[in-house]
Image 1 (spheres, protein in one colour):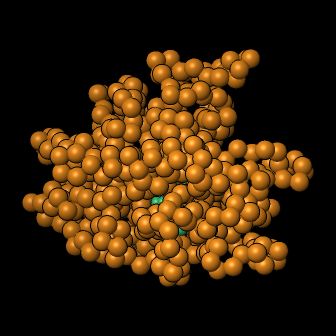
Image 2 (tube, protein in one colour; image 1 turned 90 degrees about the vertical axis):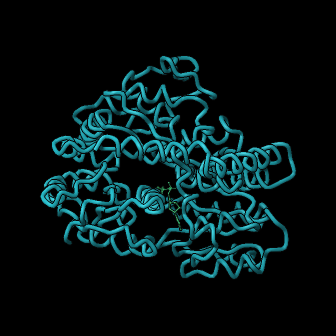
Image 3 (spheres, rainbow, N blue to C red; image 1 turned 60 degrees about the vertical axis):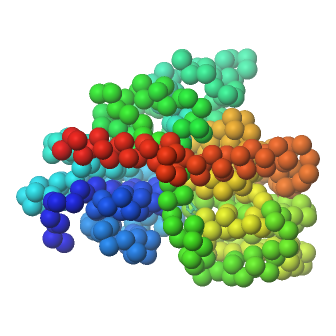
Length: 476
Ligand code: UDP
């Protein structure tokens, strides 16, 4: 594709190929487009199709496609982590992205030749190779982690200081960081706990992208100041060259399709079901574990039973090619009680529907923000990566949720499956009239208002985005 003329400022966005990393950067692209900035999104051919669907209303957003590199351990045709057969393929997939360095260099080179270099490149934390390339072209790189400040600060501090848990309590202290909850080793992503093992290719990769990260010009943070309880400067202290963390979220609130209620719900009958069940506001639980977590069929059985036993109405998105509800569950699940869907749904629109009163979530950061920003409290069930930290933030830091607490594994088989009883109890706690649920609902409602004000004209995130754009334009 021919480069554009240089008169209108341009930003290049390079997302990592996973839904949770790409979607917020599409929101950022739309926010920039509405401020008359041209946006070029770099992606791979199969991801380009779904990206185009999202940004088709914005003529000043264009795509450049780079073929996904072939690499050992990455099944052919997989260009997004949600297409990987299991999480085992995640590490080879991450390493393969390093091969995009040369093609990325060529993109910037073409832009240079046509005098249309961008104001900056916003690229994912995992795409660390973009940092030295941007530096060689004299372009600021803004790194995007897809996480909140506090979880990022905990990961950075743990990576740098390698703290030992207290031998008696198992608690972890991080120098200079006062936490609103007690931190234990089990809250940390296992990559952070294993970070000392430099023979591990994943640790080496994270060390590399971590170096690129701290040398970046700045950080784009999908969060808002009032959520971060004054920890932004602590997080910034890990960066070199005075890099700033720009809190400009929640980015999902820039998604005008959700705000206007015009977007389709995907191929499911969710909208119809919600319309028919709009009897009592806040009565339906939305259940989804994101685009990546591997949840076993045995665990899905327990979730199903837990939901049925809770007596609460629910919409449950199941990502499994092998699971279907057991017969006894089918018998007890009439259409009024619950809807199980297996296709991709428009989560944001579901969460903004008046009938939704709670979200049983794996606590991916996007899900957390999408829920809290529309005032929906969370039943937190973290599964991997930094989700346990996000759950701590939601439940213990912000008080806007309740935690699924396992009360012994299902059937006593020791297979690590969370029992239906624990799930059902958590659902009743969150959705019921008891103290925990009432207080979580109120906190989520308040946070929803604060989030909306942050992105409105004059709000903290709105002002920060303007300040960032001004600073970048002054640099040129
Ligand atoms: N999502 C969606 N429909 C689905 C499943 C997920 O729209 O059926 C979106 C969800 O709204 C969120 C993203 O996919 O924006 C998932 O990101 P998150 O950080 O919550 O979890 P991850 O998938 O990265 O574990």
